[in-house]
Length: 74
Image (tube, rainbow, N blue to C red; front, side, top):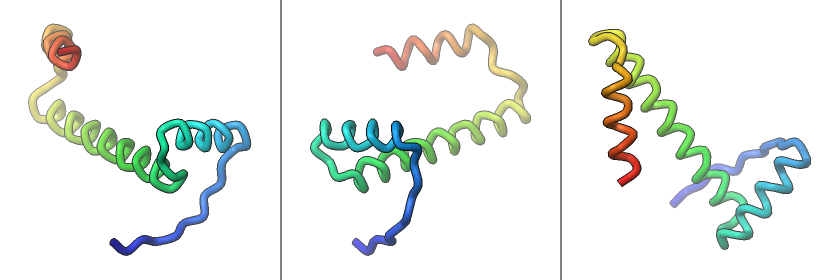
């Protein structure tokens, strides 16, 4: 798979914690950061989808939120 090399800057403490977390999982730093970015992009897409749904149908009730949260715990 082709890759594109990026240069990223982190605050020193975040860089240290990121390296340690990558090492603890046995993945390369690049793979760990790519996975984290992919996860964040999915969260942002879900957030936009929820905003669109609520704009069309109204806010989600606390009862609906509780039902979804209980399913996540299973």
